[in-house]
Length: 136
Image 1 (cartoon, rainbow, N blue to C red):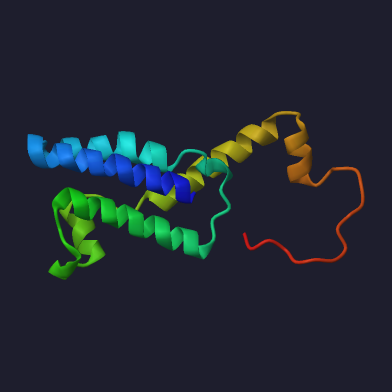
Image 2 (cartoon, rainbow, N blue to C red):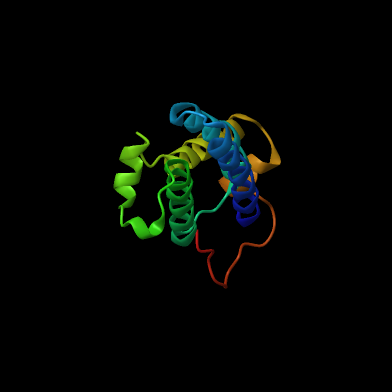
């Protein structure tokens, strides 16, 4: 997930340069962010195991993008809610990831594959007796 965040920040920096120098309108820039930045950021998000820390970082990235579009510095003391109101957006990145995960699980559960058996816990072999559970 961190790698995709770095890639999407690089793409956003390029788009921000275009926005500053070519005077692209905010509504068009919002569409461009959805098409290019989010598509890179959310690549493979169907299989991510999101922790609270990951969710916090993704929400911070989302607001960081919108602050860049509006050219709002962190020192301007504008809340995240105010930034989202300014671009007429709401927090939707986490909901979009959860929608994609639900669609992916539905797709896997309709097929008759090994992955379905693993998700349902129908694999042969010894069952795990001791050890720590994963954090997701």
